[in-house]
Length: 77
Length: 171
Image 1 (cartoon, rainbow over the protein chains, first blue to last red):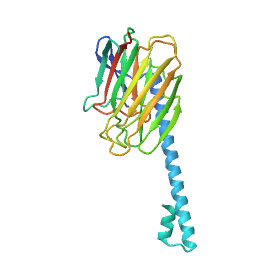
Image 2 (image 1 turned 90 degrees about the horizontal axis):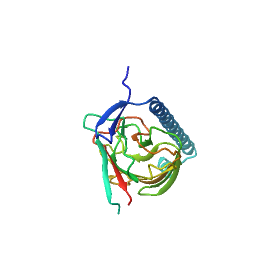
Image 3 (image 1 turned 45 degrees about the vertical axis):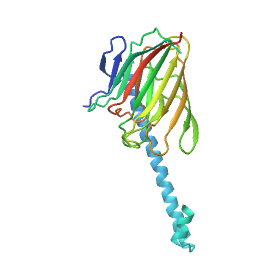
Image 4 (image 1 turned 120 degrees about the vertical axis):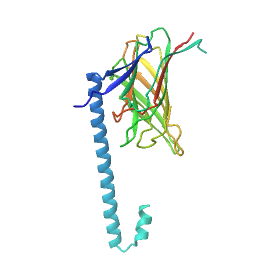
């Protein structure tokens, strides 16, 4: 069992800082945020993987056309 | 120049103790404007992170416009989320803090709240990242609390992150 995330809250009327549990709304927002972030990162990784695969495929086809490795690297720079 | 600029509260996350969030409650209703000065970074190691801010515990009816500047270009963006600024994290600048200033005028009024935000990832050796933003919070309640957290990752804020709230009287 994990601890409930905390908010450190300063009471401006007393100056006293007290740690409290996140509310249900705060926890729900945090869970959604983490899920959105994971989805964003997965999409970014998939896009990067697809781009790398396309570049490798293009390089292979260029090589079959007779371009040298240096020429292919120059085109991809 | 306002004749008062009063510190209402301050908190620095101590070493050895990360904080998921930091807040100010029981904010006095006797000033005209709230100003928050924040020096913050995130412990998030897997990507860029942002600072989230919400008022009175409410995370809805937010509308943000951002103008962003880097060392190589400018851009703009909009959101309806509580993220108000990109901040340094363990992922990109592990030892550098981001400076953020937030101004909330008319925080006791019964009208919608306008908020100004400016921030900069200070200390970067190459391209820094600056943000100037305006936010509209479509809520008529007087503001009595402000809460901050990491709005992208949900991980802890870093030790030595510091939050200070001031009240200003404009007359």
